[in-house]
Length: 297
Image (cartoon, rainbow, N blue to C red; front, side, top):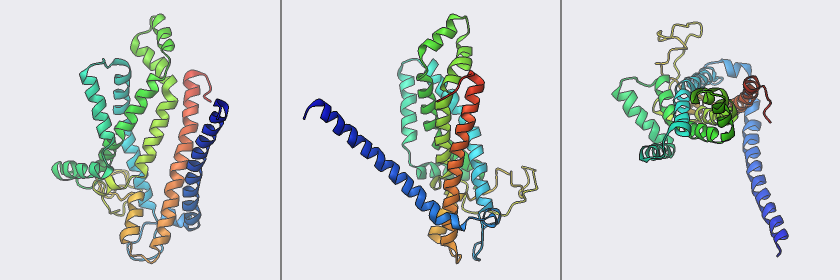
């Protein structure tokens, strides 16, 4: 077999593997949507869940998931951004830097159940936060920081050194070069990392069972006082998320239509993640054009 034939065979094998992955993805998403979309309705999305009666919805679980995701990103993005910038631009090549990178790798390999148990023992019990949205957000921050930090670091490292040198040659400080030149160029990769971590957090269940809890108390959506126990914005209240709700329905659901609610909830979960990714892509392109006056491909 000559080199040209070998190259064609290798390319065909690679394309076949890629095709299998894509087909599996479409099969999984299609299966969930086909089985779940028929159960989605306005009543399903805006009604509270039921413990024993049929006809319950996912209003509180859906809001809890979105609220917890927003709180997690607010906590994790600044920390990951600062860590990524430090590792990419300022960290010297020494033992301490290697130790930091090793710690990030170890943290990224921890199972979500372990992170959840850690959050339960430290924040729920030791610090007395109880099962709450804040505790879940802190646990997911530990869960997402390695992915975000590594992605931001790699995105900054991918920016050509020529752009840094151009900024420094004009007399711009190193920090302003980072903020005005390097970060806008690295923005597409950074947004990709945020999207991946957000989708991972939105669909997480194991860590949240032990931190944000498995109950969804009825809250008042007209009460904007975050210190009120009945306020939907109170971060210290227990909050069953959509992913935890799906797990709970399939393990201990006793409502007559538990299977239907589970299918509908799974479809909503997939749709929200897809919409979030699409929206983030559109917003990212808009921000990139505004900052750089260019267009990303």
